[in-house]
Length: 235
Image (cartoon, rainbow, N blue to C red; front, top):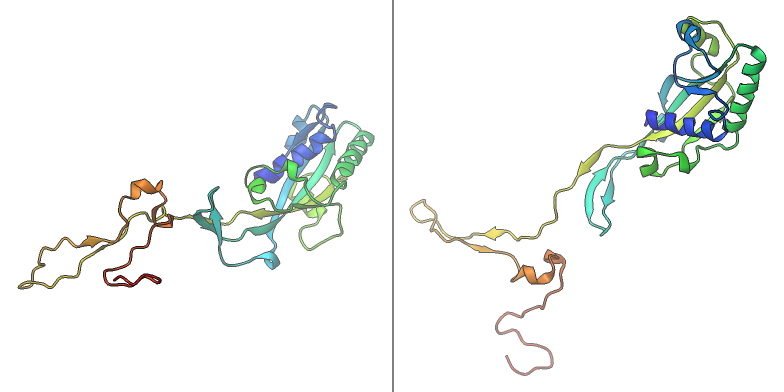
């Protein structure tokens, strides 16, 4: 899920025209060593914190159906996680960095959610909303200065970006549908050994003529001997 959120953010910033203007979009940690190797205008979207939104956790399972409506498995509910990014701009002049940050901020605040067209993989399969918040109010967690201190760099202007996305639940595959009945044997033992009766299979006759629908197919109901039909005087 994390790499799918990364891809969604990359596509969102690419739609703003940043890549077309020659700006690199990377997800590298902006350390001193990294900044020394940089040789082009760059936007760094660095993921530095992952937290579960425990208030949205649910229990139970949901059925998974195929195109014919047959149950193919079960899946536990998704769990939601908050991903926190540090978004920075890197050029040779502070004015250019501020201009890039302004363009990035404009792209991020256009909507409160990541557009569905930018969802890939499990995010697209789940079809759930992915919330984004750029430069929002301060929340519990490491401050920007703490992050820069851990990276070994100097504090600079940055956008605090939070994304809340679902992680798909565990999937359990169902077995194939039942098409054959059970074999029932109910015979007395002879001197402690089975009587040798092969038993009988509880199944319908000629299943091949029912287009492989198994027990779901409609069949004529046959009355046992001696059962009277309504409206008929014969037995």
